[in-house]
Amino acid sequence: MEKILIATDGSEPSREAVEFGLALATEHKADVTFVHVVPPDEYMYTGRLGPAVPIQHGEPIDESETALNEAAETAKAAGVAYTLERIAAPTVDGIIGIADKHEADLIVVGSRGRGAIGAALLGSVSRDLVGRATRPVLVVKTTRVPVSA
Image (cartoon, rainbow, N blue to C red; front, side, top):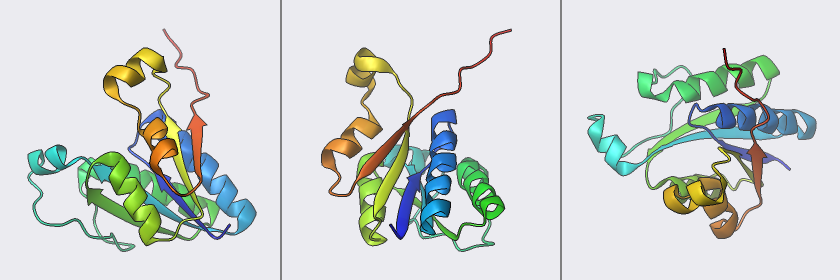
């Protein structure tokens, strides 16, 4: 395994996916691409126009993409080579497109664990990725339970 794509949106499940994907990358000496997909309606709502472009190291990332900053910092700390991508697209299509562009050997994504009813009503990115991607998909289920006060 040489290339791993990790989807991140800043949620706790995606943070766990970043950590797990980076551990795999370290073990296999693989390069990582982090992708943050902004659905087109959110992309337009935030006022950003034009096609999304890959982010180069050191290029400023706007505040809506702190997930990429966090992933980059985690990768730096782990000593893993990475690239960042942000795109406006339907989420699953965007992840698959970037995985194909980078010829990823594996797609890593977190799961919110909404359950069958929540997934049926809201959709499930991880479920749709597993069903539609032609590349292997690893779904990292959240293991951290929030502490209530």
